[in-house]
Amino acid sequence: MELTILMPCLDEALTVEVCVRKALAYLKRRGIDGEILVADNGSMDGSQSIAHAAGARVVRVDRRGYGAALIGGIEAAKGRYVIMADADDSYDLTDLDGFVDGLRHGFALVVGNRFKGGIRPGAMPIMNRYLGNPLLTFIGRTLFSSPVGDFHCGLRGFDREAILKLGLRSSGMEFASEMVVKASLAQLPIAEVPTTLSPDGRQRSSHLKPWRDGWRHLSFMLLRSPQWLFLYPGIALTVVGLIGAGVLTIGPRRVLGILTLDINALLYSSVASIVGVQISYFGLFATALARKMRLQIAVGFPDRLARLASLHSAVVLGILLVFVGFGGAVLAIVQWGNVSFGALVPSQSMRLTIPAVVTLAIGTQVLFGAFMLGFINIDE
Image 1 (cartoon, rainbow, N blue to C red):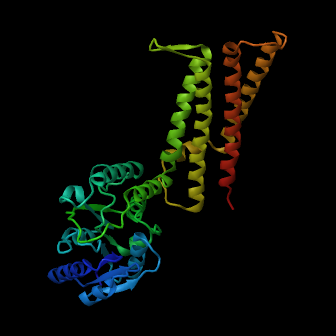
Image 2 (image 1 turned 90 degrees about the vertical axis):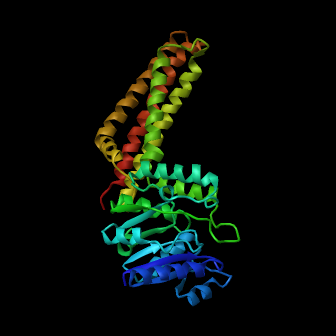
Image 3 (image 1 turned 60 degrees about the vertical axis):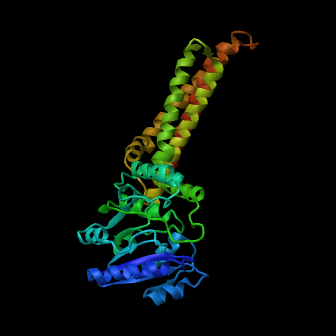
């Protein structure tokens, strides 16, 4: 069998029949050997019998969730190719030529793009249309170098075997992001088809919960891109902190002629550099663990930095920083002794004490962070 048209279903009694009939009409018009498969996720309104009577094969998926229903449907599909679409009549299932032709031309994943094909009035909430979907898509394209311009389009086609090899696991709405992200990381050939989104035929609220599901999409992408979640923010914070601390160690600085940065700002800058180094190491640890666990994540720059932070070089750097920090602490004690261990002027003494403590802290983090990376990378 060449094609399975797959629809996840949860209480879609009002629309599932028309969707099945449209999909069957498409298969007949194109002369495609195919099937209509409805993956029912526990409908209580008789959607199963309606879909079956309309000509679909119905499979029951007990694990709840949009992604779970689709995973169950993909596993049960008989077609070489699968086109998935919502069972709410929001997509035109009589016009799937772009998806079928793309798959036949060798693309492993063909994703609809509603922003190119058109979104009809009332089909998508304003917040989703102008903020949620564009922002999450931009983040996904940036983090994973993906060519997909609409990460959350529910109409897409794919080579069944290629997608099964990705090991998709998300049970919720973030399944849409997982498919695109993992396909992009695996460098599968991906194409887009302009797709029109119409108002659905439901007379109830959507299963989609914008804020909850938006967060699940975002967290999924961030957790598979440790360089953007940890490494880049950590490096930026470290650099800003070190520059600020270095400038203020020399002396107070007047800013814009209206405020003076002194010891307090030096302390904040120093702490920022310590926290930045720690966050950066989180990124290196996450990357190393992902490789150990054979997880699919975005890599690149972290690999090069991990080599620089390798055990031997980082241990040497860490020990050097610890000695420098310890030397600064000894010098601070000597200065204190010069005033017979009496009261000090904070604006003077802290310019030595704070940098010494920061150097000790960073040196310790680098030293033991190197050993932690070495521990993670031990060959069994």
